[in-house]
Length: 364
Ligand SMILES: NC(=O)c1ccc[n+]([C@@H]2O[C@H](COP(=O)([O-])OP(=O)(O)OC[C@H]3O[C@@H](n4cnc5c(N)ncnc54)[C@H](O)[C@@H]3O)[C@@H](O)[C@H]2O)c1
Ligand SMILES: O=C(O)C(=O)C[C@@H](O)[C@H](O)[C@H](O)COP(=O)(O)O
Ligand SMILES: [Zn+2]
Image (cartoon, rainbow, N blue to C red; front, side):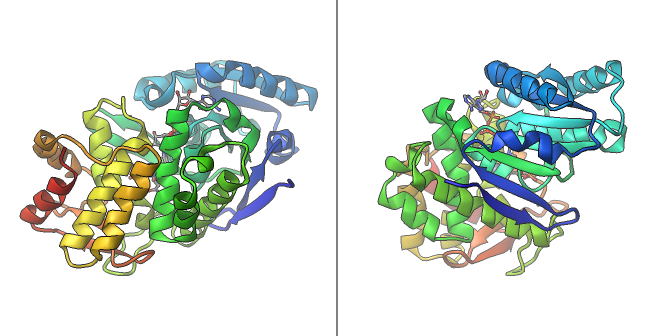
């Protein structure tokens, strides 16, 4: 089937191209002025990176492969410094570009490298996971973790293009496929319930990387993200029912705290799956969401094989980490909640007892 183009019209408009084989467009989206491209990739994608290297060389761009550690191990200050050194040693200038080839961890790092090298060089993201395609590689959030928490250092830096080559999902493990579906389901609850209908109709078949069902939910989720970031790229603070980009953070306040507590051995999608069940229960207990829609979170996420509970004893630790969430203002925690299906709101400074009660609903 032909490629789909989804437009993101934030500060610098760009296209997200989706379809089998769209990687072939890399040369074109890098543009005529680019002379060299540093391709950041994890070790698992070494063969694919070599293919990209040959593709670039054949079309007149000098490629440089930069292997970075796998998954979350790439999102550290040490790795960032190593990438800067690699670009410095190679004499990278503003006519050169960075390509992020990998899952969300790799594209988050690559984006931050591109944003910071010479104060900004051209960036193209080539996500190779479902999660990367529907979320991480689109929308311009880049960054790394620190010891204190997830994504605490970063920038908003938009790519020049995003290439979602569905063929690349063929090698993806089941855990990664399932993890990506947590962000897909999130898009269903916050904005496009048709996604939920499609997932619930066939939670097994939707995980087939070659099937039309996966492509449809991937494209719908990208559309959700593109629409949100097109109106609020820089995540201006929202309040009450006027929720901007913070909408996309549904389930992430607890989710990020779980990731940190698990020392990033849990996949991001697994952690925000529990986080969404928590956010739904918080919404229900705060009087905003009906019990049926709250239960739908648990059922839909569990049907995909995603976790929906977490140890009861972890609460105090998670609560401490949540204090550093980016939505927090001073000592006031702020949560994205649902005021009904596809109707988000912000809950500011909930009572500690309410938070504990919501956590009790996910506590194993
Ligand atoms: N910037 C954003 O807006 C945004 C949005 C959502 C998530 N994120 C971030 O994205 C990260 C999670 O991304 P992820 O779930 O893609 O994880 P990931 O990047 O850690 O990749 C998961 C695993 O899949 C492997 N892999 C990747 N592509 C593969 C392929 N095609 N075949 C085989 N193996 C492959 C990787 O080597 C890794 O081991 C988190 O750090 C999260 O914070 C960022
Ligand atoms: O793009 C956004 O905005 C999001 O919140 C999408 C999230 O899925 C993503 O995990 C993002 O990295 C979280 O951002 P953070 O600002 O909470 O670190
Ligand atoms: Zn996320």
